[in-house]
Length: 436
Image (cartoon, rainbow, N blue to C red; front, top):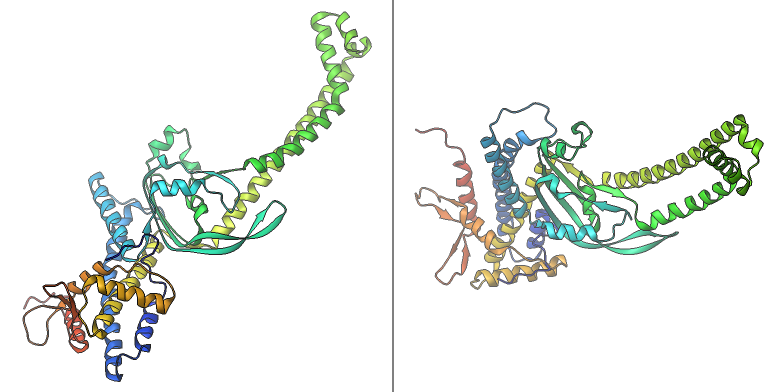
């Protein structure tokens, strides 16, 4: 099978749309079309049951690491490690079934260096994390308005339609060693956090990390600093006489009367302490007021940046923590069903025998024609899933698979009526509590 590095395995439509597209081709007569719908219905129900088990296992293993649970769960260190590994294994398996693409740490770091739409300088400390897993799906381009200096321009931006992030923070000792107060942290050390975002710019992925640090870019620092310097120079010119007076007093106390004549400060001004105190007080007030004004201006700009980022991410956040698992399970179930329906339909309606490579190419061409998008279809895993569905026909004792391969690796599927019976038999034996 051909592997396409620039193509995603995600199928950009619903399973119901896939079913309708198959039937719209007219290759099935009225009876076959009805049977095909029945087959798809029972197949979807079967996979819903199958993936529900994934969800229950993930939720059980996530319990000790859930930051939203205040109740401590009594587990040993070895139990926690076992549960964490089981959680990660199931999480990654479901992500792959949902056709998400893994974003490695080097790829994330590279994305962090790209210019953000928020025009902020950011930093993410990966040493705070025990584990980091980031996956994305829907690699597309989107036109958006971007502010450039005093005007807004239309710019094409590379975005991910969905991004899922799982991180586990290190324990409290790590943050204590960094001289950070635990109560001031925005997260709980040792816990696992999950985030699901939609339509996120590739250059803005760092903003979904809870430990991201934001600061002004050099452009904003210059725009902030130049007016401040100009105002400071004007202030110094204004208070220069008071400064000379204070310098004169210091010189008079330390060196005597002669040097103060050279800086043109009168002797009676130096001796009179009341005006001096008033001058010093007014100078402190003036300088303090200027410093406070510059500080509040800086903080206001910083808050404005944070507000923009928070509001933008708020509307792009789809779920967090346990909500991510529930959404992900539903998505994986949807993808698995779409792939199996496509394989079964094309094997059923194609008159000639097809090996996996030929079948893979046929389905990819079909999707490009019907959906207008090139997809890297995951043929081998789908064939294995079909082969794994085994049941009995009637009173026969032998387990029969929905899909079989001959010696030449050509693939065949059971006719619709038999395929329905096989899945129905699988359902009948899903629970076998009665040993009689």
